[in-house]
Length: 184
Image (cartoon, rainbow, N blue to C red; front, side, top):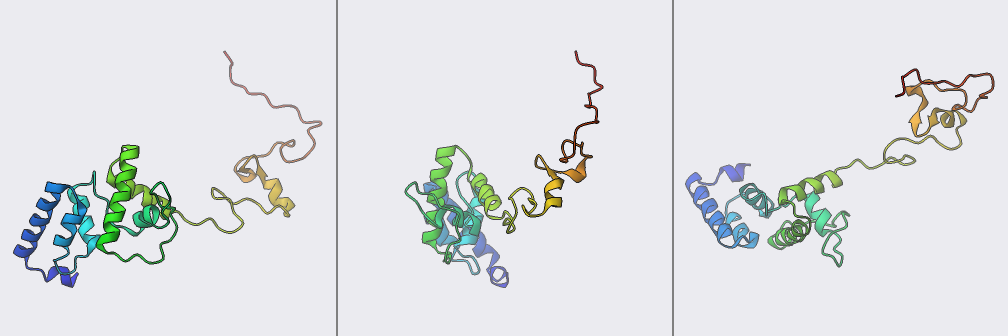
């Protein structure tokens, strides 16, 4: 932050105007990022953020999640696999690669760049499932009879009172419950 604050305000304003004009003429991130990175404390990732604020429909912010999702493990379709990248270099080439991959996805799906960012963030920030658990809920251990009794139809039995036939008990001697609602 000290480096960014050390930029002369007039020079920073002129540099940003020059970069936005270069971007507006060509709609290419590769033309504007080098201009913005002339400012102290502004690298390609921060420059992409400035451009993404300027044009959220077409420019993706160079965030870790977006890069890992779209570029970490490229396949033949031009998309990533969402695996951790060995090391992001945060250079112009990676910034351009990310925006090219995002453009391919945006064009195919008809979405905005900011939507691509949001999906990448949501997908890569999901908590990892704990060992021995289902992604949606904890599943009782198959060896624990009491835990098996608690799980009925995917819901914990503690949330409602079990009927004898649901809990494995005998249904004999228990009358069948009927709804008291009027059926039309």
